[in-house]
Amino acid sequence: MARAAARDNWAVTYIETLGWSPFPKTARVIDDTTVVRMRNIIPFAGKAMCRPSRAINWAATNMGKLRKEINSSDIVLAFDPLWNGFMDSGNTKLIYDCLDAYEFQPQYSRTMSAKALKKSELRIATAAHQLFTSSPLLSSKKASDWGRADVQTARGAIEPWANQAECEHRAKSLTGITKKRALFVSALDEYKIDLPSLARMARQNCDWEFVVYGQPVFGWSSNLNLFLSMPNVTYRGRASIAQVAADPIGYDLGIVCLSRSEYSRYSFPLKTWDYLSLGIPVFAINAPSLEGIDGVKSMSPTGDARLADYDFSRHNFRRYIETAFANTSEQRWKLVSGS
Image 1 (cartoon, rainbow, N blue to C red):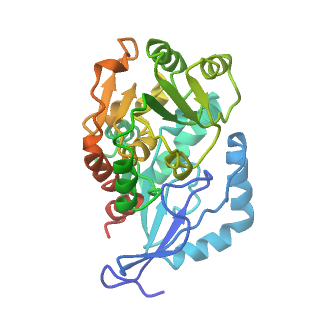
Image 2 (cartoon, helix red, strand yellow):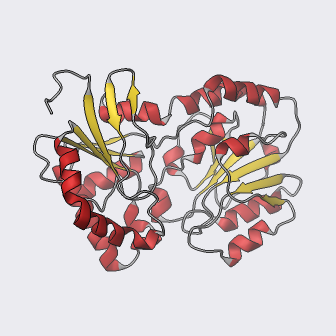
């Protein structure tokens, strides 16, 4: 394939084996200039513990196909720290976009797994032409890990559940309703969330309803069961953000409550944008990557968590929604790809 002379008609191969993505998985054209072919080489990778062996299996049987894909592309955009099989990709531009501190995830907690992951990721980072991460703290950490001073930050991003006008219409229709309802959407694993702080917040605000969506990936814990059994906690299982938004009463605020861990220190909680797109502010605990974002209030994990001390005026809903739509996956793609 002839290489593009200008920034039009660029063919892009998207590679990830983690079973999810920050960008749409369908082929699309952005601004009628950049052709993007999204490719998830292991669709919905199943249980987290199987990811490394699935990646190796795929490589053994599909390397030729992947090489052909790479050789016909101008850019390879990679998210997977375990995938370093395309390092001799000739003149193709390689961008590595690190979305998490993967070595602190439970599936890589054993010493040899963490070492193998870091070794693979270092090989990708060494070969990459450009490097990105999803938070400033993660950029600093990876710059040190990889010995590269050119690691850039592109905050984590999402696909909006509706267009901006629809989000604003919904938020405006709920401004006159008195709710005292807090929304919490998350994977409900203790390596990710601070359940004692959530329970303390629910106890200190017994006149509030805490509506919880999500489920654990690594099993139900006693702390999780205790939190969900509290009288003012309503558990609704898994749901899309569109389903959450369809609630006829709405919410006053969204909660981000990360665990006190190295993993959370470097994480960017994507639900932040979902909450803001609903026109509600975000209360964040143990989330340093959210500092400085309009609409986010940081709370101490050990301090007073009484919500009566805060003003929940809905008159700022347009500002919150504007912040969310300035951080969509489309915007992030343009930043990372340079389009």
